[in-house]
Length: 226
Image 1 (cartoon, rainbow, N blue to C red):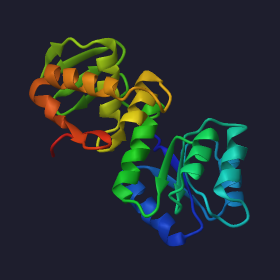
Image 2 (image 1 turned 90 degrees about the horizontal axis):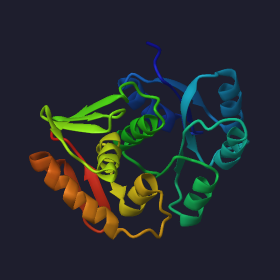
Image 3 (image 1 turned 60 degrees about the vertical axis):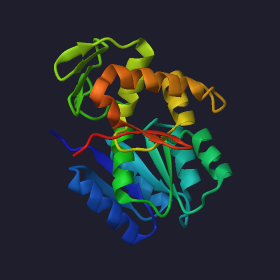
């Protein structure tokens, strides 16, 4: 099977090498570009790139311009990297259609987790019909869940919530982000909806409910003990 191709765009060679090494360890094929113009050339020359990791501040052509250009032709997932923790930049990124926004410095392991989560959400990783995590098995087509082989009855939203958690294993998820992706609410959606559904979901998952960790003041993280 062909490996999933990821384009890493950053003018810092050490940063590209760091990201590349972690991605290659996870069996991804990595292409590199040192600036925006090189990234555009590679993107249009290589037709099967599955995801782009894109730095904002670069010479010749910055990340915003690259994103604008690519979005005219493709919906390929884009993870934006930036050294600026600025809300306006983050909002601009989402307006341009990026999928994730990560501020430097970051943990390479978290970046890889975000990459895998985005690829799962966009159905580019193998195994979407049946997903397993720590004794939990989700049949996506049938909307059915089994715990250690025993079927558990979940509501439609409980299933969607569990699916989203499993697809984002190890990633801290804010309540707003969960609302956006599971309920399709805007940023001002009622976060209490999340807490109510998480409480019910934990109860139905029995001991597996412990996989859903509360991050106080933020949201939740789904994590299966190693």
